[in-house]
Length: 282
Image 1 (cartoon, rainbow, N blue to C red):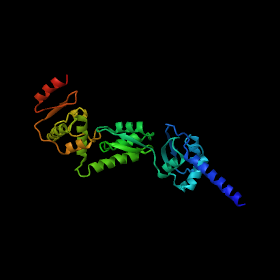
Image 2 (spheres, one colour):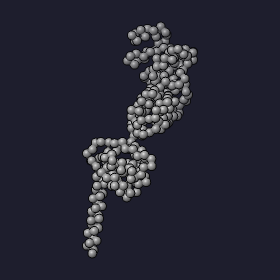
Image 3 (cartoon, one colour):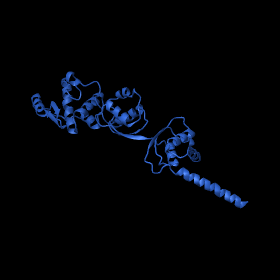
Image 4 (tube, rainbow, N blue to C red):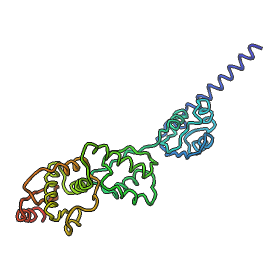
């Protein structure tokens, strides 16, 4: 009788061992395929397991359910979009979902991008957004800080806006920021390239404003026919342009132009400026 019990326990342990080996063995250890797998709010372990098997990510939904039950994570599986692969075993997949390690995308927003360009970049890199998203994001022109972001694949437009505006507030926390400063910085970002040129051009433009002269900047043709600053920023400036708007470099120039190579030519008089235009803007 004792030997029978012993054999029985050995068989049970063997079955358990084989079952564990199956759980720890990925469906396809050589697979290079990655799948965006979505778990919706309210989905339980049974439905998640079924969908994982259906997508070809695991061999058996039953094995997945067995694992999450005995690991005590059945109630901790989090909704979201996950980047999974058949080369991952069940414990790795379950851990990823239980930890909420959702898919993220690295998105770089260059300095001087407009909100339309930012919207387009986000549309290319992330999941589709609501048709009204562009209207929403346009409200924040000038305050979406250019940077490299790690963004959730299924992030909402509100989450992305908050991420970028929070970054703007963090980077400018110790600066005296006004709407006029941001508008000027957005112009400088579009107009000139280097830090030194931005500081010189900043002085030129502030002087023109004080005297009531049109800014006449190519980045925004409205300034050729109207006096003053535009009503809102024309791009999203980086910190260098913001600092140049705050701290212009005093100089005797009143005009400037940019060559096709990106060099900025400054002039003290209209006559010098016209000569520069004839020379560089052929």
